[in-house]
Image (cartoon, rainbow, N blue to C red; front, side, top):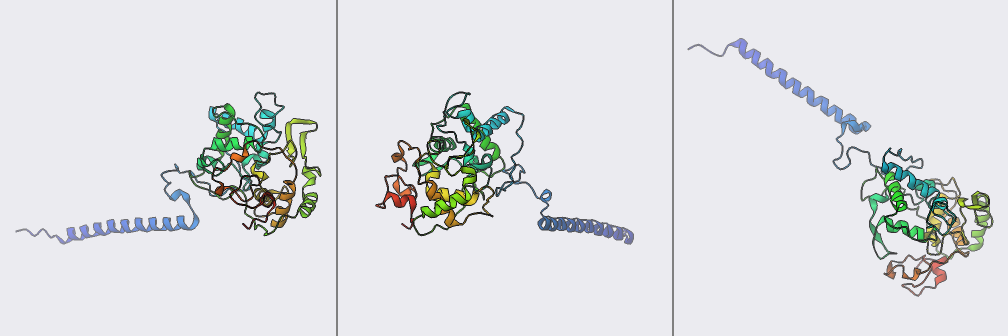
Length: 341
């Protein structure tokens, strides 16, 4: 019988196997090196995109220099652009002296008076991420509330006006704008920069004399010593304010979030005077606390029906200064502190 184990054929087969194994080992080595480089230098192009985000990088924190994406040339894009106008120029389009249609804002403030930079400044109650968060439970409403309900809360309280119809072009435009700002935020998640900064709340009653001193030193260049702010166009309230009034008939009413002293103090600490940021505040916690109390010590419009807020009174914030209360603490202490109860 002929011997099939030819030495030359056996050697060739062995060399071919070794070549294949060498290529496999080399390929594995390259893959391992690429993975190490990707993890070290953050080369996102080497990582697979998450299945739920289509490869879009998700926003984890709102930067001070946040820039909204350009509006697409679509009907939705046009609607969102109109929503931005309503946010920045609320008085012009929806205020008491507007020439465009129905009046929904009872004063000449803008949504952007509190939601700074068109609702994009971190820790100034920005809109970024809101459409990814709502619906959410609201203690004031006593139920899970929609984003539209929250928007109408601002119209009735901060703007001292009335609700937008849910199917109105204005409501849909505002929601579209918020959705546009939130396009890169993970659904259901909170991100750094939403809401307001936290402060170390002094364990004392607010000092209105100190608050007045802080106001005169830090605030009157924009808001004036009278607290009545500065109009965009002198003598024409219908064009809104460059710097809003902080009290009086054209300011937010007593049911607004900013009428709560601790809410106002947090907003002030992270944003005022202009130029302040959460990372680089210009006022101390004590200064923000006292000046917030000073601002809210003045008369402002009274919201009707606010006694119906917070059906479960145990969820009413300590600094919500109007009755009824879940406790026997005097209304003045709910307004000015101390809040150690």
